[in-house]
Length: 399
Image 1 (cartoon, helix red, strand yellow):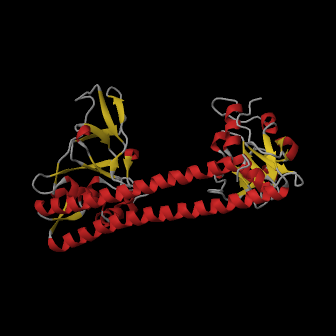
Image 2: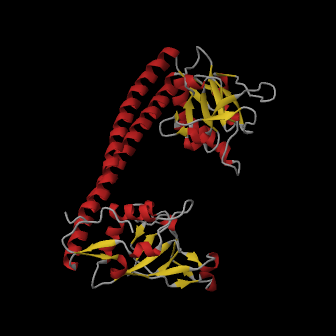
Image 3: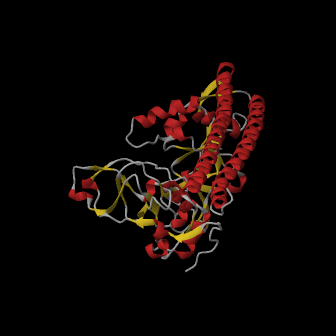
């Protein structure tokens, strides 16, 4: 049995089955249709942290198959796709899917939290990856789990290690929270700048409807203008935080999707009409000139000498424009608006010279915000790597 990188520790090392019981006590919830169960499925356990996400108590009548029981004494280990590192320490009694194994620590040998951190460590994740079986649904066999070797220092030392890990983990979570707050502040700064500029432009400039400052666009007919292939832009390909086209698809022109019908040109502004409040809006770059986008976009082609593509882009991303368009969505059960509702929106139109001056300022500001956000993301990556490194150190006996 492979168990590379076994943690080095001066105390004894024991296989898991000698320090914990794999407690597979089953229940069929549908036998108790009116009972509300604290039911944990694998998707409810967050990778790495073990936190519960989107978890809600569930009536027995909606849970069809056998489940395992657990309570506050157990550690819950996800055995399906073990590389996802899903280990939860429950604070209540409940049931879990059979892709989760309830482990019952032997209190005289191992601390429950110590076992939890050990199972989140890189040593266990690597062991599980090496020994998992199956291709589509890889899982760790129970027999292999039993053989995983765990360093077992005295309980007092285990508790010291746990306290140290918890203290450092808390500091990491606080740092992560601050990083996210900083990113939100950066986004708010830029958004506020856009809104302020649009509002000032409304006071100083003539406002016009979108339809009066854009040109007609074309619909592609695959039968009349066949293409061998084309680059396709979908709504999901837009990064709405940056207003960029982040991904595209190269498709065969012989059998295109039914929604692949709008021709786009370099400098067009594409505005997603589904859930417009998400602001899936972007300027078409030169490399996508004469390609195709989904009919889920309203394609806005700026009229020369009237409006620049960048001014139109920023104006359409403003709350001022979006708030004019959203009421059309509310009239329908489907969260989308028509092209006409987008074209009827009104935006301020300063002179081209003024548009260019404002856009230059916003681009400079946006560049600085992106740079700062990138630095924040780098720090987040460092924080993400810290916990596995901390656990590896702890179970090498170095903490």
